[in-house]
Amino acid sequence: MDADGNIQTFSTMFPDTLPDDADPIIRDFYGYYVGRAYHPRAMNSNTSAWDATAAYGFFNFKLMDNIKELSLRPLLLITGDKAHSKYFSDNVYRDAAEPKELIVVKGATHADLYDQMDKIPFDKIDRFFRDNLK
Image 1: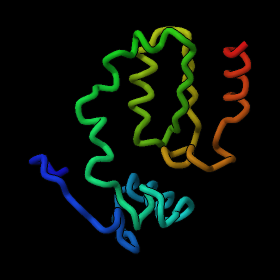
Image 2: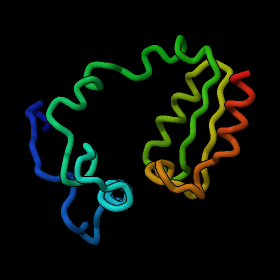
Image 3: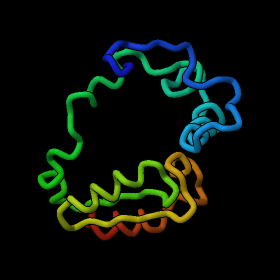
Image 4: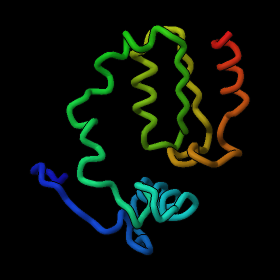
């Protein structure tokens, strides 16, 4: 949607190559969706951008409205210290009730935590589930 609420359509999400001055966030997603996770039929891959209705569920739903009610059970948040979205994990952690844990992975971006096996804190995830799913 554009700023006036009009549906915008594109045949691809990204150009074939990024300009030298591309934003670091765009570079992060480009590296994932156009590079390492590309699949011709995947919605987020470059040749199959989101359709006009894919994101409608988020338009009228404030994700933090019910955080206190939702967070009465163990909550694990994982973000990277270089993730553009880190602020959201910080806000959720701040507003959520206990028990909660926030893991900040040094040197990781948002998309790194999708598939960069050396950055995903599997040991901490395993411990969290073992401790909280007894």
